[in-house]
Length: 548
Ligand code: FSO
Ligand code: SF4
Image (cartoon, rainbow, N blue to C red; front, side, top):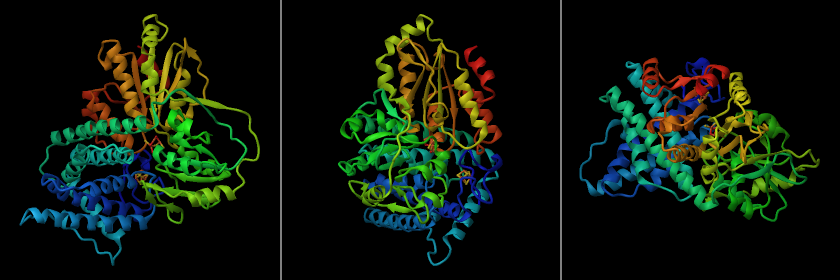
């Protein structure tokens, strides 16, 4: 097997024997095979679009399928088997539509590929994966950029999938996903072409994130500062993990008047900030647990049902398997899967029944809380106060300490960094990396909290708007603001966001805990020369450099 799509990749060299995330070589191979089939769909979909044929079913399928191959999303070989079958059926159906308009079309080899469903798909996926590597690896830098594009497109596809669930779509996104997938099969693109394509992933991802932001804010209102209890309440309970706010809303609707309290886990914490969700469903009670990599401990202790809407799902443990449910692109062998039925949401009855059968919380705990909801509207509404505080010297600098968490000890850098940020500086945060410091009492500057949570990694658009809004208010370039970005990455959404930041021309980003293994030394040099992208060093050294 070969996979190096996430930060956890074995020894920074790619997972070859078994995934550090728990992915088996067989699952990796069927994921590669599915991606290969999607690359075969791409030219057909592009031709269909050119002819004005509707490709919507294939567009949504492509995004959800790419999403399912991201890190810690789906470990279920059977689901990939089904997706590969569906990919071939959809491709052939689209070809038949194209044939109605064009009498003779020559499809390339990849668009005619037919897996043998009577033989091992894992073996076929392995052969195809190996072919991709041997064909591309002769030029290390182009191979590096091909992987950057593929991983970035996976992240982009996940954002588009979420946006589409909320009724927000733009055909430019689907068109580009196909163009990028089709490009992976080309041999005549230069290094410059690949760099441009990688930046184009960033550009289109910006559009996808904007749509997702519109989907959230138009459906649930703009987040407002909201206090979220971290201590449980007596009674039956369901825990919802992942990022999918629409699916959380669907569960809240289905659990109305059941007496069940709904808790968020991980990246769903910012859901509490959406006024139309919170007001409509008072049983959206509090938050439980911390970041994804602590889930085995957190889930084992949770006395109710648990629903995983997206990544990051870890290999499950017997102690909680029977109360765990997956939905959407997520899957794990032997774990209950609730398929979407109507309005693109699942029927949650089995999870609700499980929660009612389990004891729920029977003991009170000491009250603890955090405040969420400092998204773009909340922060930019007080831009005048912020500007005045900067001009009066009360705020010296802003740090965006955002990104993913993970199991490696070197991620303590981020906790230490936040602890050492001087008292006249503000820390903005987003994504699951914040769980290392989200409940720290950092105090206030005037009326402004020193620690403000912008939201999920899916809300990176909001953080970008805050930076751009401040730049506009100060009438300066975003790179001249007293703002430093200290980012942590883990999986492919973070790759897409990084490409967006580079596309926007943001410089001096510090990235860790390690740099992506798929970036070759030359590609890294190029990024550091053009954008001054740099690895994190130590909190003291980086703080001194940012404030210097
Ligand atoms: Fe974290 Fe996982 Fe949100 Fe990622 S839960 S690591 S970038 O999948 O999505 O921040
Ligand atoms: Fe390894 Fe990450 Fe790939 Fe899992 S997703 S196999 S940990 S590189």
